[in-house]
Every structure is written in C-alpha cells, then in structure tokens.
Image (cartoon, rainbow, N blue to C red; front, side, top):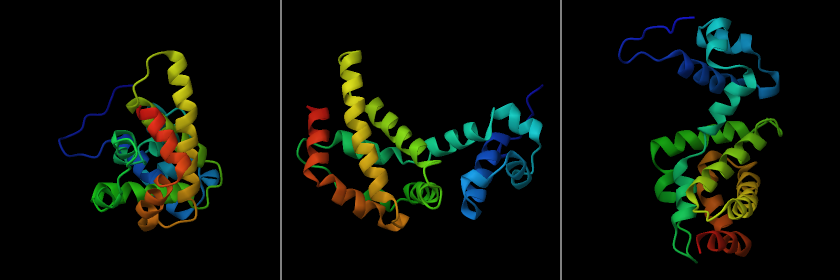
Length: 186
C-alpha cells in the first residue's frame, strides 16, 4: 500500500490515531476501547490504522511511551549526589503540563491496563540516561530504576496532574529514593 502524501502542516494519520486514543481515554477506560472507535474518532479507516499499528495495544504503547515528560527523568538522573531538584520549574511549562495531563488519564480509571506500560517506559527512559559499564551493571541499574519508577507511579496514582510536581518532589526526598538515585549516579 502506498504512503499517503501530505502537505506541509497537515496532521499525519499516525498523529491523528494517537490523538484519538487520548480523546477516547478521557471518556472511557482503555479496556473498553476498540480499533473501530479509534478510527471513528480520528476520521480514518481500519486499513490506515493497521498500516500504522498492528493492534490497539501497539497504539496504546506508543501513546503512553510519549506521555512521561523526559524532563522528569533528566531531573532525577542529572541532579548532583544528595540533592534532587524541585520539579516546579519544569512542571509549569505547557509541554510538561500537557504530558502530566496524559499521565493523569493513564492513572485514572485504567487499573493496571496502562499503568504497567507507563512504569515500564519510565524505567526505560531512566535506564537510557544512566551510564552502564557492562550488561550486568545495566541489569542491576534497571532493577533499581524499576523500583524508582514504581514509586513514582504509585505516588502519582490518585492525585491530580497539577499536584504531580509536589508529589514527586516529596517522593525524591524519601531516603530510599535518594539512596537509589545516588547509587546510580556514583
């Protein structure tokens, strides 16, 4: 099948499908969504959907992977040992506010269907930023970062996106989290 041609500035089909996913997630839990609904919401057909994604899970995986602000991972990894920064400065930017809103959709009323995906992607973001000297070192750091990511997801669950920066800043102050991040950065 030939790729469609787009004019400059046109929203491409893949983006329309991802946007439709987020629109529907505001209205219903992920477990109740269907490819048909995504297509209807996006104004595209099933052939276009399956050209870009092999399944609804693949679409959700890509959408959720981009929901976490990279700035959150960067602030955790790049902070000096013993001092994790407040997230308030980055939380006020429009991009981060938008991403926090999407994280809120994942955590609100979706049980574990998307929360594990969110945690997995956050762990991957962190792992990519931490230098590893060997595969064994990478595996060890991945376990620690999974702990941090799990703490983050559990901290955010039940809170409003506007409260995320304060909640994560408090999480960062917990001795276990500080010890994990200091160990990873040393």
